[in-house]
Structure formats: C-alpha cells, structure tokens
Length: 349
Image 1 (tube, rainbow, N blue to C red):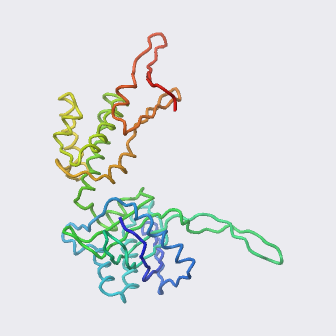
Image 2: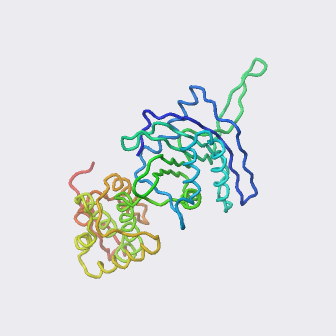
Image 3: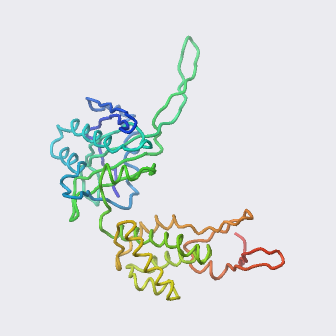
C-alpha cells in the first residue's frame, strides 16, 4: 500500500502505556529519540515493511461527527503544527490507555512517529504512525567481568514482527483521511480498530471483495459443510475462487445462478446474505469490481483440507474447481462398515 524508498523519520518519541483495568499507569517521555545510524536503519523497515503488503485502507468514523474522532484530531494537529508533536503524542497514548477496559489488553511501549515522504499512490505524503510493542523476547547478552566473559538473559524487542501499528496519512479522498493498520496480535482487534482508532473500511472494491469472500467462507462453514459435507464445501469454495478469477465484476444474481444448481441452495444463500449483513453490520454489494490483491489474500484462508479420523488428510487445491467433483469419490464400504474416499490420478508428484 505504501513504499518506503524515500521515507524518513522526522520525529519519534517513545512512551509506555499501562492497562487501566489493572490499575497500570502510563510513563511519558519528554524528549524525542535521537537515533544513531545503526538503530535508525534497523527501525525504518521494522515500522514500515508491514504496510507494504496491506491491501485495504480505513477511514475515520464517529457516531455523531467524524471531526470528533480523537485520532483524527490528534494526527491533524501534528500535521498542522510540528511543534505540538510531543504534546499530542502524549494525548494519543492517554487515549489508547482509556480504551484498555479488559484484563487481556497488554501494556507496552508505544512509538509515535512523524514520517516524511511516504510514497502512497505515487504521491509523497506525511504520516503519523502509532506502533504498540506488546511482546518482548529473551536474548543472551555477553559481558566482560574480571578478565572473563559471562552471560545474562535480557528482554528486548524482536525486529521480526510488529505487534500493532497504524499510519494516518496526510491525504484524503471523498471518504476522508486515509488510515492504514496492521495487527499481528488480533485477539483484541475491537480494542485497536474500533475503540482506539474508530475506523471503518473504505467503501471500495477492496472492501467489497473481502466482505463477499468472507460471507462465502462463513456460508461454506455454517451451511454447506454441516448439510453436504467437507467435499461439497471444498467444491463450493473452489468454484467461488474460479468465478472471481474469471470475472472482472461480480454480479450477485449471476454468481448465485452459476454456483448453485438447486433452487433451495440459492434460497439458503440469499437468507445467509441477509444474516451475514445484519451480524457484521456490512452491506454486501450486488455488483462490484473484483480486487485481485484481496482475492489472492482471502483465498489463502479458505479451508479445503479434508481431515479423517484415520490420520489421513486430503488437500484440495482451491484454484482447481473441478478437482473435487471429478477426481474424488465418496462412498461407504459395507464389509468394513466405514466411509471411504476414492482418489483418481495419473501420476504421483
């Protein structure tokens, strides 16, 4: 989503956020981080690399007026006056602290960063980044004492994975300010996305594609699998992926007619669409343009593996819509009193 080729850190400060639920306290810095070359070169990819492959963007939300959204206000104050950076970085951490209404919310280090020259859709823009480090790893540190080396275990931040992070870009479209977010510890996604940022997906082909594919995945798990079995579930998911690959635009009615042969299954899909929209507070578009990047990401979440109680697994390629129906046959053996799958093939690979 963004490129970091020319990106620079203009300002950076580190605070610690506690957990209000557990009576924890915040600890605030009063000065900006002064980097040496080595730490700067290590920190830049750690913070920005996760956002290179983000497929969707968010926009600020508020039940009354989006101008009352806290993160919207704080980030734009920083963009408007860089001298207020430290003050508003504290406001951001205090706002994050106020959202910790559960014991499972972890305390941690919070980096608030002002970036220059972020490449977003061939535009060079500023960005305010907020990064929360929740988990630290053990590592060995050697040291010299009385002419001999010894070792001690210390805790530090791993550069392999960012726990949580967001970047508010200093650019807008018809829907508002562009916000990017990553969360590798999404057990508390409500806390980060809904409570702290208060954002919603942009109303574009990326969100339309994701919502529709998520609906199909849940429909396969909650309706097709219990009623028709794992093989039919895999066939449905593979046919869904094939439809999206073959069409630049998805039409709900055409999709339904091509995927389902029986009228009763079309009706169940219609009913589930209404259920999914109400449960997730989303609108499934009847016609939208397919996002190839979202399709590639979401199809990897489709479960097309058949696990058997005899310690055998059958893996079906989700990109091969005819494989399950043509080369996999399900039956029942009267002599063994067991179900079976018969697999047809030409050569082993």
